[in-house]
Image (cartoon, rainbow, N blue to C red):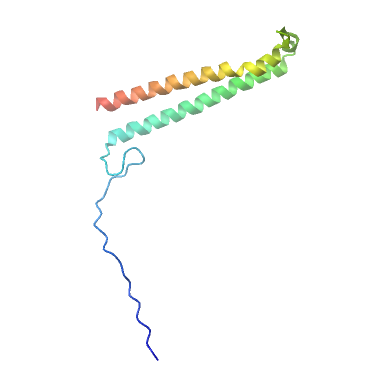
Length: 124
């Protein structure tokens, strides 16, 4: 009867790891993290999120108002432009300028937020 060999655990030496500060997604791993920069970045992210949510809410409200106006005002159907009822033209083409206006407002405001962030960051 042969005795089964004893199991041996084989491991490699792990190199000593130096503690790295948490970056929370605002810097590359291993790069130094400035606490003020982290605070400004979080403020910018919150500001951009508020702007996005406000823009979407405003857009939805305007689209609902236009849709209700077309549905609830029967006189719009009686007006004919280029052989088509005005309500059809509003449903087909009125949303594009609304989208464009909200897009331009969002981009300009987001760029202003980022300029303010850069001004605060560079002042430090």
